[in-house]
Picture 1 (cartoon, rainbow, N blue to C red):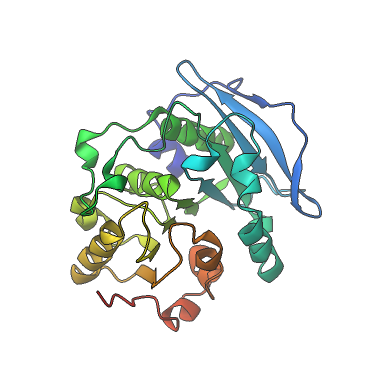
Picture 2 (picture 1 turned 135 degrees about the vertical axis):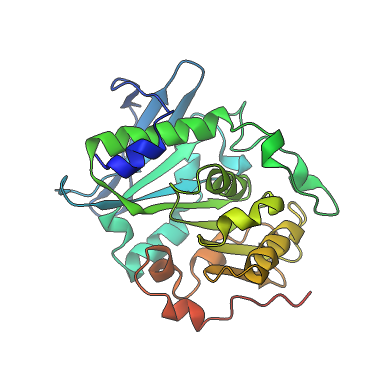
Length: 283
């Protein structure tokens, strides 16, 4: 158990029998890399998830943990969609670097009747964003943190590599977690999402990478642009933003395959990212 993570999640109670097997077959994103089907069952919510745990994991060695928060189209209870729609970039990452294979990787599936974040700001035509002080943390995000706490009780997780990446609704969720649990989160990748731009001062020292296409017709890119500029202008030196002129809303693969992104995400090497054009804010 990592005591730092335990202290940050002190208010999230979870029983040892709250996480159980889901009874479905493993999904393999690479040879010898099974994503097991699990579920968290709480008093007010049940949530399915897939998890990969490295074989022969040293329980005394600090291990990174990576969460992927999917978009709205993958909501459900089949415990498949949130993995199936993200196999391309996952396999590409695995081919290039060993980081994922040496990490605990968790892909939760948000239930149909919930969201990672309860806001309609994504559809606002002028890009007005929500206020986190006015929106409670969703039950599903709370369940994600309880899953994190459960595995922190079983393994020695790395407090410096609690990593979240998400697309669309999942990107909103990543930012919401970062704002509410700033000391817990290490870095996030947010693709085609939005955020509470008024909270930028809390995030000046956090590692953040945002992606958006300027022709996104589902989520206005203004939230991404405003957050990037606000953090950067206030002195934040580890925030990055990559804007695509075209691509629409569904830009996961081209975003996740940016040269150097893995090295930056896992805190191995920032030089490749610095050499990449990541601040092309031409508008």
